[in-house]
Every structure is written in C-alpha cells, then in structure tokens.
Amino acid sequence: MKNRFFRSVAVLFVIMAFSLFFVTPSHAQRGKGGEMDPAMKEFMEKQKKEAAEYLAKQDTAAQEFMKTLAGKARDEKLKAVKEFKAAHYKENCEFRDKMHAEKLEFVKKRMEARESMPQAMKDKMLARLESEYQDFKKFHEKKNAENMEFLDKLIADKTKDGAELDKLLQDFFKSQKDDAKEFLEKKRENNKKR
Image (tube, rainbow, N blue to C red; front, side, top):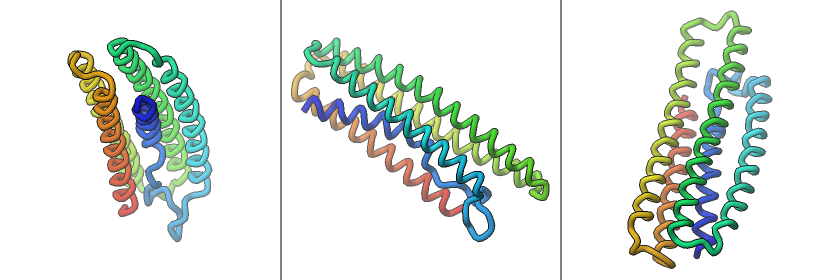
C-alpha cells in the first residue's frame, strides 16, 4: 500500500510538471494547409525532448526520495514528503518559467521574420501564449496549495496512521492526478478549436 501511495505521488509530480509542454500548437503556429511551421515543429520537439529528460530526472529523484522514507516514523515521513513536494514544486516552477521564456523568445523572433503578419495578430498571439501560461501557473499553484494543506491536516491529525493513512494519501493524490489529466484534456480540446 505504501509503495502505491509513493508511486502515486511521483506520478502526480510528473504529470503536473509535464502538463505545460503538451498542449497542441495554436492555429497561428501552423502554416498553409494546417501543417505546423517546420521551425516551430523543430522547436516544439526540442522542448518536448528537454521536458522528457527533465521529467525522467525528476522521476528518478522522486523514486530515490521514496526509498529514504522506509522505516521513518509517521510524522517524520509526512514532514519529509511535504518538504520534498515544496522543493519539487519550486524546481518545476523554475523549469516551466525557463521553458516559457524560451518559447516566447522563439515565437517573437518567428513573428519578427513575418513582416506581412499584422501587428495586431502578433500581439494577440503573444497575449494568448501568456494567458495560457498564466492559466497553467494558477492551476499548478492551486494544486500545490491543496497538497500542502492536505499534508498539514494529516500532520496535525494524529489519529490517522498505518493503512488508513496510506489509503487517504493514495486517494488524495489519485484525485490530484485525475484533476491534472482533466485540466490538460480541456486545454488540448480548447486549442484544437482555435
């Protein structure tokens, strides 16, 4: 039971970190006939690869962390999970910010090269990219706050332990994982409509 909980925690970390990078490209990033601009496609593949490498590293770190929890007392374990999640969240925010900045820079350069593209269209596209990113940030901030609040409640509620505690943790993180999947699916669907 404990391994499933910790695996669920690791999977949730991965899903939430990965979520930023797999929303479909906008209509403005596509060429004639609906195909993706080759330069944009190459850039997106580069970012996808970088994200996959980052997430593999994060997954390994999460698995190694989970091993350190074996044999720890309940409170010590919960506090360690909370500290790990807080540090992991901070690292993921920094990584997402870096990837977003790179994407904005790339898109701006591509638009500068398209002199025939009206400035209003360029502004609208940049505003949409920024708005989408802010939506992702808000979602991740909300999920992190929920995680911290949940862990704080568990730390304070000494009546939950053993299998009951593991079940609570497993159920909570499964619901967080399901929320992240639903959020991503909605984002993808919205982008397909554009």
